[in-house]
Length: 139
Image: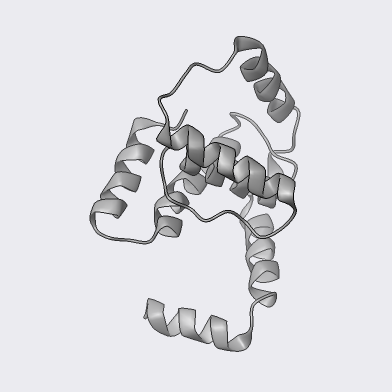
């Protein structure tokens, strides 16, 4: 469950008319923070980002499903549906199993170097025009 401050920041972004990806960024930021403080780990920076996006969808952020295999799209649709419906408590067994699995993972995946490497890798997949447009939009 996301922290109250994270939900408030995401809702504030929504009120200001910011994009769903910006709203979801708050949840990713929270996840990175959890890993850095040692609450749990992740197998890679991509997994940390995926956990944050999943939390965002479950909190009601209208994010598009990811490109990729059908199983990923199905999981994203499941998360979005959970965000729209009334919430029910996750079973204790599942919750504990997820927590224990994440606690065994590395903490170094949220380091500045790891996240920087992931960002560069992600940017390299985009076209030069796309990166240029994003940069000019940001300034």
